[in-house]
Length: 337
Image 1 (cartoon, rainbow, N blue to C red):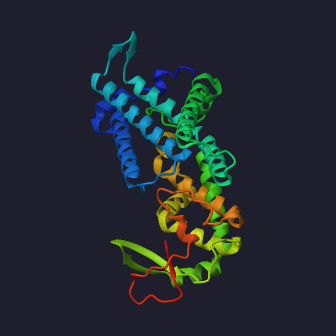
Image 2 (image 1 turned 45 degrees about the horizontal axis):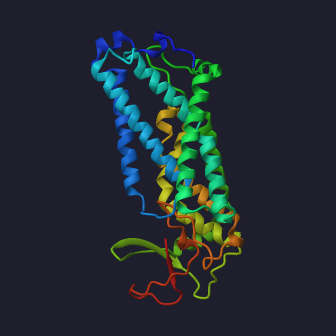
């Protein structure tokens, strides 16, 4: 990638002298620390699963890259000016490394989304079922290949730097790339969710009115009426859609509202912040729901295992699970969300 000038990439010395609290390096360090802590918290909040998928491996790799960026920023900020392997590192490189990461993250949304779609399609259709160890190796090398490919593109394509110059950023700040991929991906998902919500409005109202909250096995759960004669095969997309929406929003409603606010206010978020693990798991849940809806006529839970979501329990959309230990619960039986 074309070298960035010190005028655009370094932080203004006069600003640092006027108010050290406004130092860009310090603010950047705090942001990356917050993101690393968010990564750890999100990964720790996942439900324990045995099923492997591409998105899980990519999320772990993203957490590792964020941690690596934090270590680099910390070392450079501490030593300020040093030579390693014949290369002189200064505060300029804090901006440079973060810009490279921003470009890389900004170009990853579409490839990750596409590969995750293909992964869930293949897992659902079972057209290419690999042994467990081979599957893990396949995901591992696929993630490595994606990172290497995007890094090579960012570092080797001169047009990448031209996109950065087009950003309208104050001269005393280190300019960071704003990804258009994440905007259109988020916009498309919100529009699809809005249309699905409007389409199944009456069914959603009926289900929401029937939902009750209780405690079961030391967990707070939601459950709604389900016919005791229900089949294990979902043949109607219209019947399945409101249940998928409730399951999805039951976990991700705050994140959906956040995305709507960002889109309405046209908030520009640097790509190194926008590509994060909560966002990826949000996309992951959306993809799983979409795959279920498109293939509802093929779902037979006696024959197949559902794709496991670390945050959403999708089985409640399909299995008529009776809760025998709940007081005052009789027919119709209920399912848990």
